[in-house]
Length: 482
Image 1 (cartoon, rainbow, N blue to C red):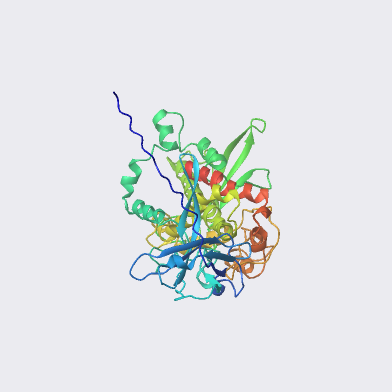
Image 2: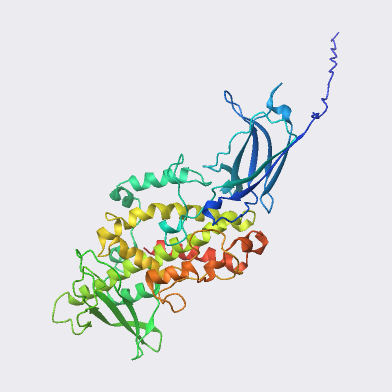
């Protein structure tokens, strides 16, 4: 007969571990006072991990906590986790939650706040230990003397060049791309708009019609002014800007007239004004302006095309300096810093963090790439590095981000600037205008402040819309149209 074997299983369910004594570690995180005019500004919603520090082995994680709205944290832990007969040597590390998306799902990556190294507290026997106020370098501003606009402080002595929280891979990728040859990088790009026009026979990049299209819908959509005779015009002036003297770059003004019953815009003429000793663009003496039209250039072959080329070159340089570098990079960075410092739980952070994080690193790399004596602008245009700085100073803050309530400044560096090409509330243009803004006057940029954004729900819809517009949609337009 068939044998039947019965097996009896004996199971045991362990009771939950209940420590005999629980200890508490508390403290408060604030921004580095030396970089914030001595003010006490709390860091809220920062992840705090409490470890037992071991010299010969890996640290033991005791417990995890998080700072509250006022920067305070309280961590309850079991000292027995330090090991048999061992008193805990307390060490705290700070982690930022970096949002990213994998397969369409939001993932919060824990990233160590680099540059923060709080001393180890050995052999803790106090059941309620207080770390006190701890100053942290976190998305800090550069000192006023080293930056004319609010920029991110970079510590090149850290393991990688940043003293705040950010995934290091982004910097490595940027270095890799910049190290590649220009030809290698260009191979991977599709044909641009003008190349496609020539290839497909759909238009002529040097035509009057395409110049109008550039002014209206190019990477630098220009702001038209109205002349006394009713025509519209766009002018590019080198007033106050130094030139290298290697390339010819006069002032240019293009005039347009409305035609076909206000349905189209036609190029009418271009006025070229040379400057005496054009190597110094700010020379006060200027030669008599000369107005060129397609009609009066007929006697000289190629003259009209060359005049339009002078205007297009200025269009490209001023568009890059004013619209791209100043408006979308440096101007937006002044909003990114308080946003990163204080907007930490609002869902809008998850949306904008990748672009914001990338923007500040691109800005850092763009400084030498664009404006060094051997950089792109001095090598390919008539502008000197200080001419680019002048242009960005003059244009800085021209674009306003609305929807912010007034508040005190949250740092000791230069406040977000509102200068614009007309100066600060009627004050001088250019560098003096920016200095006036930095020292006292505040535009909307000055309202991205601590108490306006510490409570995440206080972020206005208009601010979110403006940031999304300038940092993503409009910026993408500029990049794509280039």
